[in-house]
Amino acid sequence: MFWKKHSSQLSDAHCHLLDYEELPEVSVPTFCVTTRPEQFCEARKLAEQNSLITAGLGLFPLYIKDEIEDLKAFEKQLELTRFIGEVGLDFTVEEDLRNRQIKVFERIIDLAEAKGNCVLSLHSRRSAEKVMEMIQSRKATFILHWYSGPLDLLKNLRENIYISLNPAMIKSRTGKKILRTIDLSHVLLESDAPYVKMNDGQYGSQLTSRVVDSLSLIRGIPAEEILKKIKENYQKIFT
Image 1 (cartoon, rainbow, N blue to C red):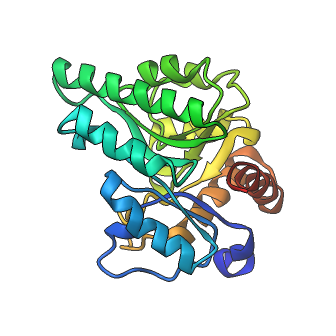
Image 2 (cartoon, one colour):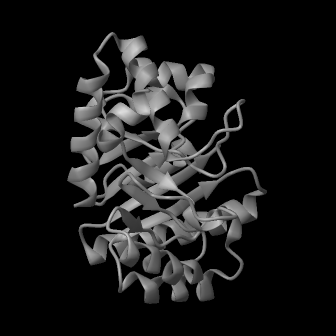
């Protein structure tokens, strides 16, 4: 099987390890994102127990309740890490909540810039244009998780902006177009587990191998070559 043969080359740039009913075995380099600042301590403990895990400090846009208190908690935890996720925008809500999200996200970017050398995994549901506008001139490293926005925004990406591709994306029309056109120097793999599940019920980091299979088939590039480049991208960001 591809997974068994190439497991040492795979990685997972967006996984919600804390949201599993039972913590899975982590056998590939994994970015464990969180959705609230209070989760970060638990994610950090996982990272201390397994060197393959990198813990992310998150503040999911739909979970913002009190922007002042939420940002205060976020800023306190940011003293402990340079890895941030999941943060961003979600425009499935009304305008006043969107504006609050924008204020919080902008502050998070400012904090990341002030700290320096930060990596942010971004949520951009129905808000890709605004997210890209906000990060375009920034110096931090940004990973657009499960991107589903306009394809033209992915043209001529700055070197500090990446796209993480998951198994569900290879099923959609937009996802296939992204796989066909995205520069491999901007590609990472993600599972978004346990939230991405395939028709056969499988989910988890090992399914990122399906993305590699699809990239290889669509682009006509050997899977080994794709894996090598994606591994280089991951190591560049997380080490």
